[in-house]
Length: 174
Image (cartoon, rainbow, N blue to C red; front, top):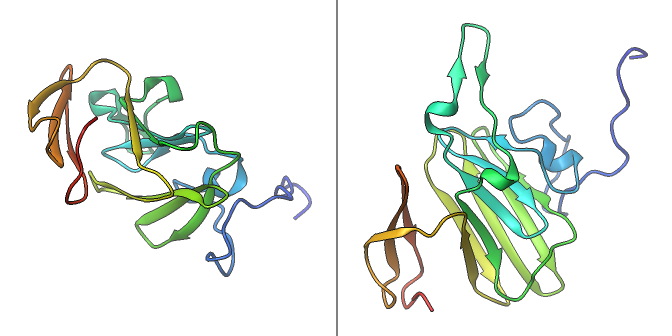
């Protein structure tokens, strides 16, 4: 309609995403912007950036009223940044699929890629890598409270925020 702003010409999606493009979801900025705005999946907040996926736990910084839920996270607020060991900077993030509750963001550079899936109400982020390994960067040095350099499972804390990191069998921390 005339009073509405036109949709952007570029839709950031892979060929796997078929059908109409949603415009009003918590993750919609993923399809309308080169990367994304912060996406509040609650309890986590994610932001796609040139380096990969930033993950934050807003915790008590979220407020609600009868009308809405309010929170604010910037890319620099990320507790953990998930990147790719062989790709220092991605050109874009594309929506690779979605369901009623989950979305998948795809980052690719030639034959090197990472796909990350996360969902509304889920404390889990699931990642698949091709042509390299996961690269985790922490905003502050984490305190490791479970696991070690040769383990595929680590428990880490940054202040009062606690995370479980699970790698594939045979994974370790260099």
